[in-house]
Amino acid sequence: MAEEINSTEQKPCKYAARCTIAEAMLIFSGCLVAFVGVSLLGLSIWSLAWKLLAYSYFMDIITDPTFFNIPAALIGLPSIFLTIAIRRNQFSHLLIFLVLQMIAIVLLFTGYSIGTKYKLLGNDDILRLGPTVPTNLLNNTLYDVIQTYEETLENNVTLDGIQSKFGCCGVINIYDFGNLSLGIPTSCCPNSDCNQGIYPWGCRRRIQENVAWHTNVTLSITQLLILMVVSTKISCILFHNPKIVYVLVLQCCNDRERIHIRLLQMTSSA
Image 1 (cartoon, rainbow, N blue to C red):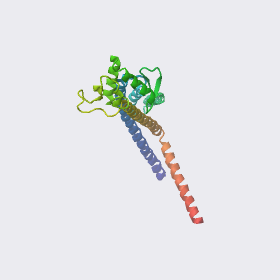
Image 2 (image 1 turned 180 degrees about the vertical axis):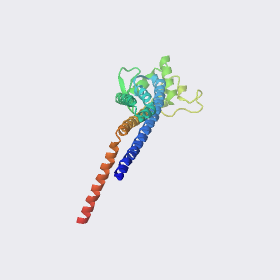
Image 3 (image 1 turned 90 degrees about the horizontal axis):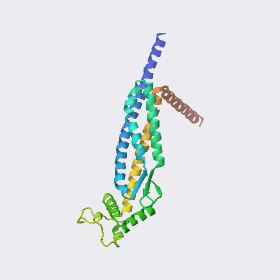
Image 4 (image 1 turned 180 degrees about the horizontal axis):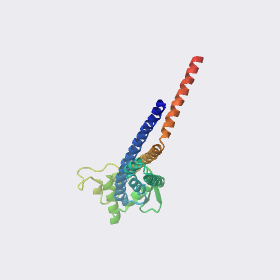
């Protein structure tokens, strides 16, 4: 009888150990979500500021993933505090946490699916930009700006702004300015007197590389945040249903035992 009492008293200890593991997973996941959220927030703000300053010379921004990433990242910031509150078995905090995480996932998937849409200056078509820029339309826009470089102050400022921001010269190279009476603009050089040479690459290449970098890095951080949010939800399930861990481990052990017995039978029969 005493042995039965002792055995029943030991079970909560094992159960508590599993709860401790679930708590650690929950808080660790919350910390990761907050960290990735801060990274995505900083990257999105910097990326949006860069695009507004650089791309505005030749593109009008219609939509951009950063419009959705910034609020989603802000939602992920209080994850640490909510997971600590959930650890104290406050069910209301769990509901708030799950609702906020669902909103964050919806925002991230919306930004990911809509993508980046711009309207090139002088063109009414709205473009959906991925890691690459439509070459023909970009070429036409840049060549139009070069051909009217000496005619209007607006195009003068536009081309100088593009070449200064991206560190480039012409569309393909400096020979695109062969028909200009003023020669090569000073914006093709690192400094005003051009004593340090001329940028060796064209603006089309630099713009394509820049768009690809911003797109790929932002999407990578976005996908990582989605993964962290999902893992945090799984941790919440394991925390409030710790028996799931026990069932999974027990099932795995039983499967391994059955496989081991089957292998022994095959070996003995052979």
